[in-house]
Image (cartoon, rainbow, N blue to C red):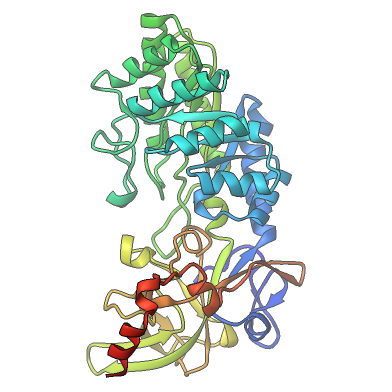
Length: 447
């Protein structure tokens, strides 16, 4: 098991995060509980900033807020000098509520509604990343109504299949995202932008997937994108001043994961773009990258209380916790793997192999298959590591479970940044038609 960031084991044998004893956090805030290591978030943001912007200048790092988004997180990203990408009106609203500078917001999405596009225009976001022909037409029309010229990036699919789970591959030709390069759609989309009176072409965007370990994937992507930039200049005379190569940088979840250093990632990307720009006699574009998982993922831990067990001799022992797929659907979706520790007995040696299951009424509600742990007792605290990315953001109220609270831990202090939902929250938006409340229905119910 690998401890991350400020994690440690204190004299009582308890897991600590951000100087906070997780046993005390469970008593104060309850479980399930998301714990975010603020120092690790900031440290990773600074690593990205220094590796790209600090070292090369002509680069910008923007945080992929779909990974983990709330007002407090937007404040941290803003303070660390990173930009922000959003993929919905809700994420944009969250960013604006945090007073995030709109000129450093990039708006993505393969099916932005007219209302969302209008919201983005009114907010004066820095870039709208256009994804399809319909969006080009709608955006140009809305920009005309508002008498604005909107800066756009054209999203393309470069035809690269990153070595990752098929559900999180986005750069291959068979993808719902972007204009395909090989079919000529990408070039046609750029020509449409150039011909539009209210759209200003700034450059290109692509994204090849998530949880990527092979840096050669980024080098190959840069080659495809710079070739397209050269073709655009040759056919239209336009120069792509910005090149957004997306995110997807992988992290350590479990044994076998081998992430590279952020500085190595930056060096590979920037060297490839520089060399290819020179080979095509193109001006060096501003390079943009969009890390999300690598910033929030390792900084997050989910704390559970263990409950029932089921031991099937010769087959498997199940240990159930008070959360599950409603607060972390990634195992069910992607067959994601995690490491975990008994937070209240973190110094003890492993004694048994168990599988950790949630409390949802689904056989597929599994969090971890076959993990070595000390002998688990009911009431122990289980800390599942690296849950900061796509856990809270993908959580649901399945089985009418309230979403957990989120606390931000730093220097021995833990602050709630998302309150725990209550049963009252679950029914807050429920409405009952008058016809269901009539006396006739009450008589039938009494029978």
